[in-house]
Length: 341
Image (cartoon, rainbow, N blue to C red; front, side, top):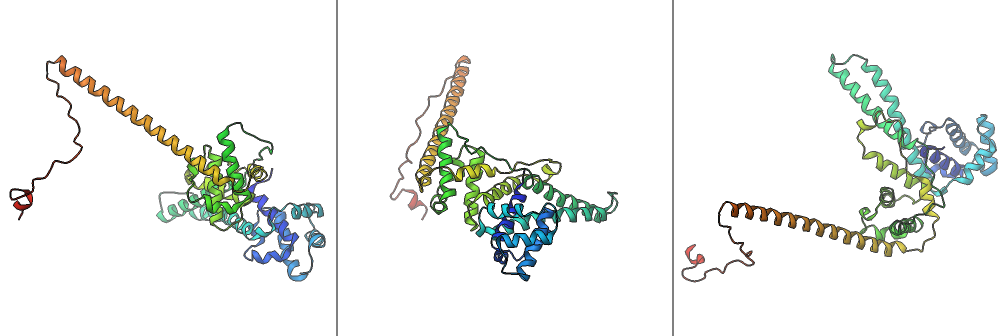
């Protein structure tokens, strides 16, 4: 199964095969930023052909890449599939940013290995070497945490997956509307908090939708899955992931299912208002229950104290009504105002 990093690399290469002029949207990218060796070779040939034969595109471009790369796994069918399956050709700049981010974490691992060699194996003798060892450990932890999530196999949700929970259905319809009609995000996000969602996955997806929109990025499968995964991983301490052997990347399949769910444009506004009202009502109800429990506990405690005092033959003080208003102030020659002069 493919990973989020691998899928993003495929999306960018597919967009470039479709329109090589888009390489200008990611001028910072280098072959070394790609994780897959085949992707490194494809990108290198794409860049060279763009300079040497700028008129090439489509099948003709793919054939030249296959010829120049001269690798058994780089075939015309593979390159054609990349071009046909790229989710959003106009998003190449955002895919490039994501690929560069992944390349940065791989550099962390390279530097961690180099610093570990410089630090040696003996600890507790040289403070500087001990510091280098801690630095290497921190860099390695960042890479391991990133790799465990972003290079783990993507989960694929069943397209026909349904739920019988009415609340969950409404939450999914709201998310589907925001994914399919991003114009409503700015209308909903100022007053709808992620806390109204009853499941972590839907809560994380809503947060990702709002964040991606604020960053000016397209609302689609890869950008949302990337933001969800990054957000989930950033909440974990580095030390907790040093020995982690796996990750739990966001379900791109779940995002795709919501992207194809039938929903009326603007439904998120009405559904969001209903969810917020239900959430507020639930919180108020929970608050009343809590207050009732505290009141009952106080009454029981008071009753026990009165019973103990009567058993000892003591007089039980009568409860006084609470003071609802301050006592009237004495104003005049004998009042406080005059005495203070």
